[in-house]
Length: 492
Ligand SMILES: Cc1cc2nc3c(=O)[nH]c(=O)nc-3n(C[C@H](O)[C@H](O)[C@H](O)COP(=O)(O)OP(=O)(O)OC[C@H]3O[C@@H](n4cnc5c(N)ncnc54)[C@H](O)[C@@H]3O)c2cc1C
Image 1 (cartoon, rainbow, N blue to C red):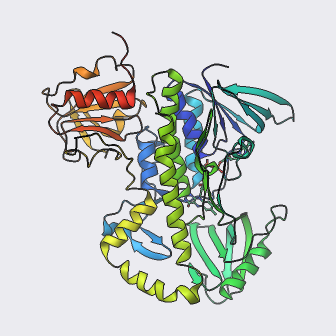
Image 2 (image 1 turned 90 degrees about the vertical axis):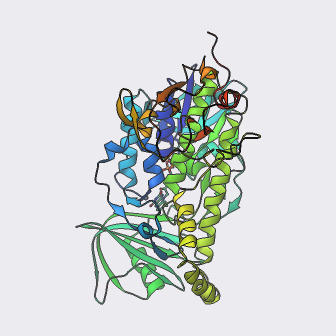
Image 3 (image 1 turned 30 degrees about the vertical axis):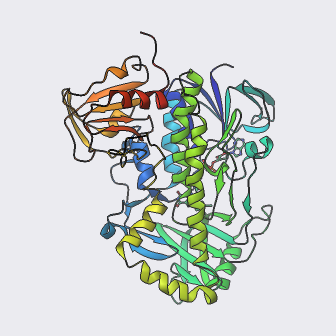
């Protein structure tokens, strides 16, 4: 099958990769083991950066106007008020809802999403990758793509079968997550609390739904084959907090761990890894979904460009180069947070000191931005061009744009998934270098905006700034940036 990408896994990462590929007109088949979309969610905390990504594809509106804002986030259970620090808010949005919107969009754009199908074997050669799929009836069939994307979660079959190295540490922690209908405690309700033996917390999700979450330190989780029960949860809460609680009607129960690993390479020939398949870490601060969505956003357009034939040399490999350090940074901060939680008898003085440090606004801002993935900037620079260097590599901020055709905003200019040249020069910039890029880049002329201090700005399809010229006079610079990110111009 030509021009096809096979995506393993229809979780948030795989579904966003699929929508990105379809936007670029690439055929895509998503193989998802689960027959039904999820009705429950591990993820609940949704970062502003994730919302920014969905906004750049016109999907924010589908999530509704009133996504609840969770005004606080924490670093290692030191709670910090995000608003007072000027840090973008964190939202409360169940992961299943994000997946629902992404699946709807992927199907709408023509992605072939096959639920109840599972990848069980694979092989790759120079021209592509083949997978063996088992369908819902147990019948097996072969599927071939020019590329295979492993977005099949932390236990990724693709990663294992393709032999990607996945160094890191196994789990010594044991976590239970439960959504329950009723929860009673004779003395007092359990609150998010740090105890010598672990963490026990709760979040009210609605009038009849409470989320309980425990983590026990230095205790390995029981084997997966042992079903998780409400008794197990009660015993865990008791061991951690000493409290005896009455819990009725569990809606959903699952276990998790602090297994921390990252694929040594995100690409191996025709196979790429994204999301949890590429990195796993302890779920603290709501970082997993955000990291996976940004992997997908970074990868989708590069893979499409490679398949369409206009990708400059090294573009696809820049996926690993840009995203691996981000995954490593997330792993570092989750490990640092865990180190500040346990063992309490040894780190008590450090916690006290760290708590004082966090009262310094710059420190709080730095750490929360780290957790939110807000400060991410890819290493893009051009020799001799330091004047606009501060913008390069950053995601473009959203801003209202006044154009000859009316008012729009920066995010809307990216909805088609193409590159965008924002021309704020009132016609004075020399844009001759753009000739031959009309099939990849849209030009939007608008009045200058204070949020973006440049006369000419070139955006990749994922909204990261790859060229910024203060006065629009550097024609050679623009030509070099186009060549670096959008390949050679089409013949006129
Ligand atoms: C307890 C807990 C709480 C969390 N809370 C948050 C939070 O609040 N905020 C946040 O951002 N993140 C949170 N996370 C992390 C977040 O849930 C994950 O990072 C996110 O689900 C990763 O998405 P993904 O698409 O990469 O992988 P997944 O969501 O795991 O999706 C992978 C998909 O692949 C499918 N699959 C697997 N193997 C195969 C196969 N062989 N063939 C076909 N399909 C296959 C699976 O069925 C699954 O649908 C939490 C995680 C845990 C454990």
